[in-house]
Length: 239
Image 1 (cartoon, helix red, strand yellow):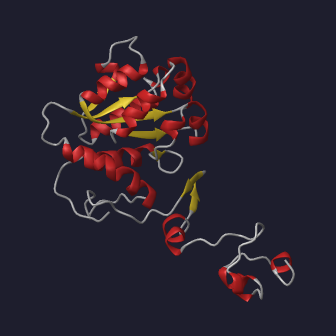
Image 2 (cartoon, one colour; image 1 turned 30 degrees about the vertical axis):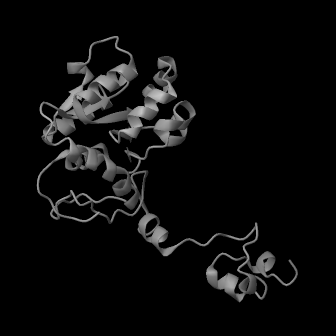
Image 3 (cartoon, helix red, strand yellow; image 1 turned 90 degrees about the horizontal axis):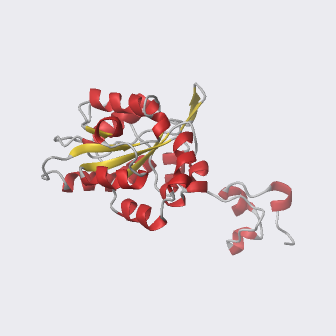
């Protein structure tokens, strides 16, 4: 556009756009200009981003209402948003007797590795876990096991690993079955040694649900957040 300074200077910032004699008058955003992000997005997702031990870390400065003020565990804004509906489900089921806190869904290949690690961490924090090695009969299809486990647990954890991603297509999981489970606000994906992009290739519905990832937190911190999530004690903090 004649007179626009974007080709020479770019509109990387609002001030740059305001300085342009064309775009400042029209509020115009050209296809090659850079979008400006809101302050709320920057503060919750970009500030304080660091890298530690090869682990990409986003700013963790939020606490959900169910987290004690004395807790050393902090969350991203996205984690609080994702876990809040799950917490509501847990609270609604608080008076239902004989339920486990969580059902841990995992690939068979992970039963003695990362699944056992997560199980042990949760149990050490007082969480009662429905675990296939103890509670699910061998040979039961994955989705049937998830459905049965959820019926006897307040929430379900899906441990998403390369082994699980390999197994999901073999189970021929119907989208409508997974959609029904996700609609209950009972499933929390725990992504380990893989990515949501890889999961999306085999299960777009599960990949659409935000959960926790060991790419951002060590497994011990993931377990601590899950333990806080299912603990029904008077707590303080704000969503």
